[in-house]
Length: 434
Image (cartoon, rainbow, N blue to C red; front, side, top):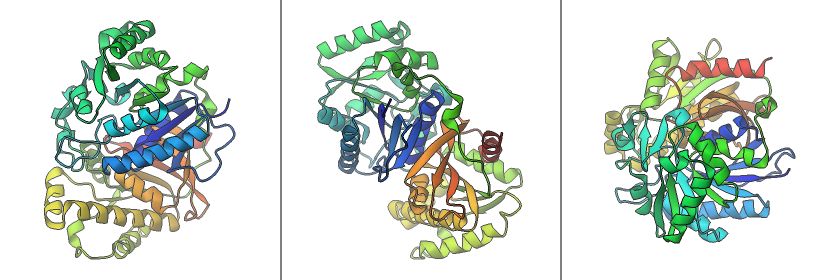
């Protein structure tokens, strides 16, 4: 069947989120960290190229995305999928800017594509779009915790407005009433929008049924842009159906650890739950060391603590904090320096833990996941079973792992139930040990 779908994701957890939905729908998926530097498995029919481009300047995000597109073109993929977060956030400096629009338009131009859709809807994780407005649960995006995100605050829930501010092309809407009527109504609406000079359409979706109705309407669209939700409706366009063996991973072994850098409300709750349950936890306080302390020195202290605790139970190392704590650190250390320094420490911790026998690793937060994966020298991940919506276990070779490979899950900060950290390891054991 060959490589059918080529995906470009703007961060590492988002890439895993997308790969998870494709695997659940029956595709055999490999996620690569950056451009693939090794051959893909012969049975792979979808690839997700994970970039770390969500929070960099638009010009750089465009450059990286076009390089990924060129590689996908050389593989003769049938369709390209640009994946962004289900909260539609990207680079932010206080101006009305972002990466989603510029990357979308650059991909359209490079592919000679005159129309595409945009929707971050992911109902399984309570992300829905109604009349062009993005909801998180029952709240508008602009009323949710995303309004205080330290890197990418979102204060406008109207996606047509948000995307139009980032685009030169005209942005329109395919609303819920049209989607509910199915593939022919969606196709007619696309024709109508194109006749009006509109090139990008935000699409409403209130349920998985809406996404499944949308899927067939995208079968001949060269470029799709979306969160991960749309992926559930695409594999059937190639006659692919869910299959039990598409999520098979090697049996899990070794020590267990969690590294959390996300400051989202969901992750704050997961850290609090783990600590309340008596889990061994080390809180990384960026102000506890002089600002010029090398990350490796701090990481060595943390790893020494972890190795004394992880023989009997999972350990948690976290810099997760609430909005006021984050603002305090940023005001004293500078926003960019504080974020980058903490990321480097957590990445060094991940490397040290794996070198000391951890082979089951949970990482929370998109930026943290990117830093940890790069520090561990991971270039490809095989996607396994889902823990919670949007978050699967993966398996990856790593030269730092004592056994040559490790199980790893890259959790978006906003995803997962309150007991995610404890549930994750139980889920892995159940899915890899018959």
